[in-house]
Image (cartoon, rainbow, N blue to C red):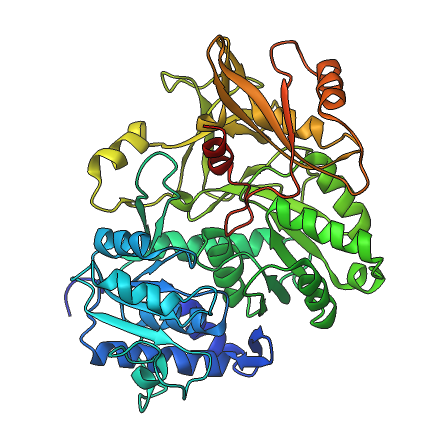
Length: 528
């Protein structure tokens, strides 16, 4: 026999291995539902067989719109086993947005959860499909597998899987084949599809697993998954890393701090990943209800934070209350996502996202893409095995983002003398007031230390004289009586004259996206 066998690597092999080694281990817990790895594997195989019978071919793209339920894992791994590239969609998208993603990704099929009365996901998907003729199949995932489809003419997932074998040979994908296409948030125009290969995704899942459990091999035993699985962090750093570690994944379809605390205690959760607003909500819940945190402190071994910078004061308060270390990390959809982490083996540095993970290089550069000295702000650029193949069907955008062989993040960061990276702000969030750069993150960090401030977001608002003026939206602590004038006066004492907020608006809540990030674009839209 001449030649060498082609190298194969399929992200679904993580599930194949877990089912082979720990078939009886609980894989997924969601409400009253519990699936072992053997059951999850069998369901994924049946789904793969059903999709193949519909004519799905390796390389086809299939959209997946599903909250954190067992259906997501069944569909995700089943599609990968059949050789498809999975296109996860934000579950809150409206028909126009769904149609855009179906058309842009050339999706051949859409698997959608039935939804609720408040969020009729299947009905919205049906309306969207009318605008995307290339999407040949609409399959509805129902809570009850025996229930009829809520969409006329669209089969249910149960019907698609019915009678299919629980055995299916995983497609022999090549490492550079596209496994997942994650759409960026589109803050600077229409969303772009970042193509991530099987190699990108497998390596980042294994890297996440090893990095997060470095100090204790049982750190990832039981994970609370409250970040949406359609989001890169929940998908790679918890779902895929967790399956590779043969963890039990406790799914929370919609984040609720009271439910999260209850699940952490009931399921003896050892690891959790959240965005800063989730940490804030969990801390508020614990403080206002007086819940006994002693049992949680005994079992919770590690937490991680990403998605947005964690205010130093919030991290300090949470770590003190829950007796657990929070590892802050950094990454983007285009980086699979994990790029840097405050590694367990080294002390965390306040306000820092740590050092690069294995194989990844990070630089901070100026406008000419030249590295800047330590301690100097510049754009964060990254290269390594975690970087996407490119933006689907967008060679110009890919070339612009990847110029010089480095992925340009659009984030402003600083590397200190010891190699710790700190994210100062998004390029687009930077405020230019009277020709001087102001970074909202710096202001938010200090404002969070005020005793009457519970949550804050700082933006630039249009100003005829200065170009932009600085405005702070503040959620006050319960019982606080601070006024706008008092807050502005306090800020004047804390910051240089050009950078303190002149405008303060108090809010009961701030607008949050599906991953818990504060939606600054909504705040900007409301002020014109």
